[in-house]
Image (tube, rainbow, N blue to C red; front, top):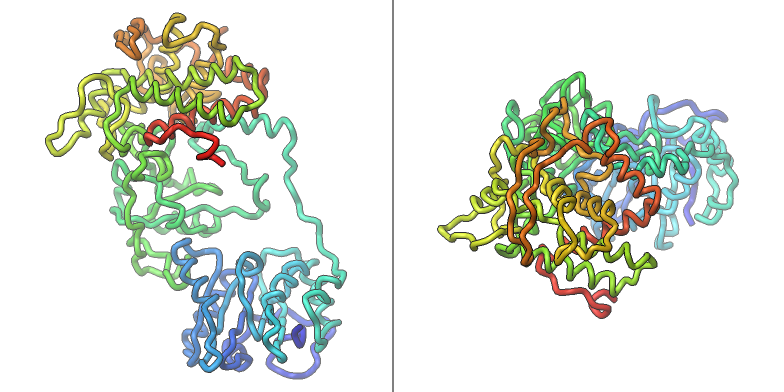
Length: 574
């Protein structure tokens, strides 16, 4: 239990019936309430209020440790700040004054002898109160409250007013968490976006829109007013931006920033976003301002971030940059996309060693068959057989001579790559494809080659040919319901292929593939035979879950084969 709630104020007199809005607690008052050998926790409703108080405490420089935690830190620094917040308190020492926002309401195991909080909706207030005398160590724990600071805060005014009224009634009482949870206080129903069936079906199309924005799922996974972007600071030129080959930084180095502040940042300094279709970093312009949910890049010299305080528009001090944006050691897409149209194939580099195309195709099929064996999905046998065949032919497009030459150019240290068609390289780097192959997607060529294959050793003959082509094209998630590039579409080019060009035969898995004349007609708008119509028909016939499951089988089999993993068994997956 805790003594309180009591309104935090300069005076000791009874609070007025309708307390007016007040500023955050004066730092001297917080210091006065703090007791040596304990933790004092101050929870405020906004990041600005918390950082303002932390600055004021720093200027006051009381002889006590201090900590600040809120949501506008990069995860690497937030982990440090949280460790400071939760550090053991020496009962014979000076103690700690910790300032935080709503981030301590859940998921942070922390106890305090004195809790000072702004009024918030009752469920939030109860969560905060649970951080006061959490382990019943103190006989004189105190919970102090005050109205929120003037200005915008993230809560409904009616909810805060209802909490203030309830706290006024409890003023001076000794309460427990159960007492607070059992108190009925009106709380507004949250506004939720309902995911209807048409919305859900529509989300199956993961293609970016015409200006390069990803599908916005925000309304279904976050509050309507959660409009953050993520900003990462790199050691790059502030004018020219990220160099070719720069990856999306690891999430640990991305700072969540409110959309309004991100737009203000973009007016003061250069920011860059990654254009998925063009495979390059493009500058954020006034006509294309920051959008909720996207990842942006800033130069470390731009400032606006301080490791001890988080995102800070007043700071001009250079930011400690992301230590590296080199490709992930596995070669998978976990670190982001290569930022140049000539380098769009990160999954083919940085693998355990050179890997022949024949070997990779055979091992991917074996991985898919083993996955089916141990997972035993409740799917028609013909569907899973088609998925296994898709795994066997998914990388046929890598036989393209320019792609093969680019992969070989990654060889270093005088070590010549093996003879024959290759699928993977042990070296990191971007594929130096010629400019006429800009944006090349081997999955597209693989799907076109599958169209030309006759039943034989590569195909069993009983496959669902439309499903087979779809799974092959979609195995990197880039070509699903649509295949297009950003910007103005070309009438005779698509993703590094030219309409009408000839693709020579190659010997793959003991079979000579037929010569192919590239026909991009099905990927153009209109026409009787449309890739999008075919894919939508598959989605509607099989349902989005079955189709996504089959995609997953091929993709995971490819991952495992690329890493030269052993075949999965019931023992290894249990």
